[in-house]
Image (cartoon, rainbow, N blue to C red; front, side, top):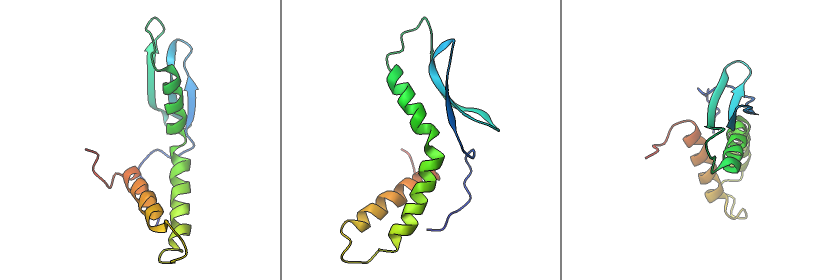
Length: 108
């Protein structure tokens, strides 16, 4: 798979908690806040741990994408090798995730 130019905000992405709200934001150095979810302090945050976990996952997206592209490139070298069980499914999963990240598949 050939790496193509992506349109999202370049990484690294970092998370930051709020002091006056319950929640998290994902920031980049050059673009500021690119994603956030929060609750006012007087409002119950039923999914506070989930919010934090989501923020970590989102902040890892650029690194995960780069790793997926490298893995796809390496694993595709074994495509067609009968000794490599599960290679076709693994490549399909990687290629599907990469295409989804690039907006090349419908989400609905």
